[in-house]
Image 1 (tube, rainbow, N blue to C red):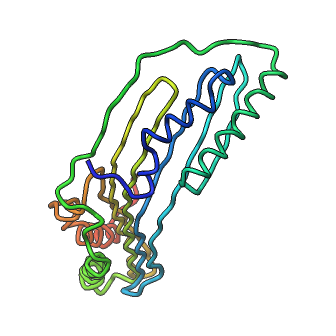
Image 2: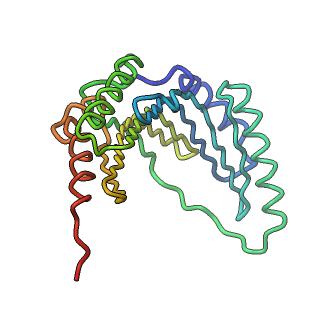
Length: 237
């Protein structure tokens, strides 16, 4: 399984260094690191309101000693930063232990080593931004052209791909590779002073193939039809 470049710093050498620093100082530690990238496209009435992408790195460090916890959060995933943050977490754990009244231990556990990857046929990272933009334009046009009663359309696309690595002092190593995609369609209609709206969405865990399902392809026309039909809705008696 491929892993994000920024997470390749989390290797056996780093784990060895962490265990060496923690020896005789704390009872338990764990580190969760992650890399997230994604896209957001927001169109209203065939015009773009937002086209953006993100790339976020994060690291959470926990250290424990006799009832006391220490925490440190980082954005830099290089080894030097992680080791410095780890030492800060140890100091905070020892300080917390000296102040807490309720002392307790964490029971030892067997190592858990596993790699999880969500099934997908089309990697989001392999899809050009232009293709995603054209998809949203396509849905906007379908909704707009459905009826002259349609006054406003709004289509939102969000996707994300995350790699997460968890390691701890029990020699566990967990790698998660997860991607998701969601699309929203909102349509407003007006007739004879009556305004109605309809909202639908599709999405799930997986890749770009989510946009090619039958429900996804009919998303905008379904929303447009519902919004138009609601103009004829009668109040319950």
